[in-house]
Image 1 (cartoon, one colour):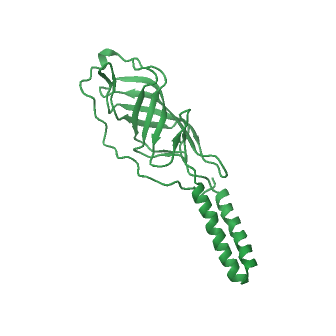
Image 2: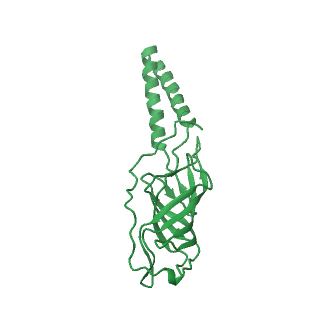
Image 3: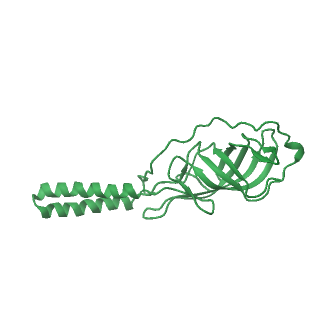
Amino acid sequence: MVPSGTHIPLVLHNAISTRSARPGDPVYFETLYPVMIDGKVVIPAGSYVSGEVTESKRPGRVKGRGELAIKMTNMILPNAYQVNMNATPTGAGTGGGETTNSEGVIVGDSDKKDDAATIAKTTAAGAGIGGVTARSPAGAGIGAAAGAAVGLAAVLLTRGPDAELPRGSTVEAVINRSLYLDADKITFTSPGKASDLPGPPNREPVRSTSPF
């Protein structure tokens, strides 16, 4: 028996994003480290884990972050022994600012810093244009207000960064229900070996250019 609450480190083989993911879409993982019970390897590294997207919520235009919910439902060990499982993420390394909440939902990053920078840039540009055109402080003030309005519109009419799990993301999964394995089918003599899959590069949050 692999008890509920056991943590299994996984690596993702297919990228997922709230930009395109839909409930029911498949997800494919591989175990990175062997699971041992009483000194015996029961789940070798390199075992395959599959599941599906259960929820995909895009970030809002004004507030709200992208959210991805996934569950792991099936495991295939290196000897082709297949077992049903019930597991959810407790953490994810995506190369970005995604986090995992207490319910196992992967939450996208925010873009507040860039939002502020956008408004600041358009405000400064508007002030400069207004000042040159009107050749007065009042003109600069009017231009700054117009520029701020343009920047605010640019923020409000586009979506925040999508929640993303690029290929190579690492996911810490926790088993929600104990796994009962056939002892005759887990006679492994090595810890196994995971594929050499590179991790995702570091990335900054990027606001979508489309409001849709």
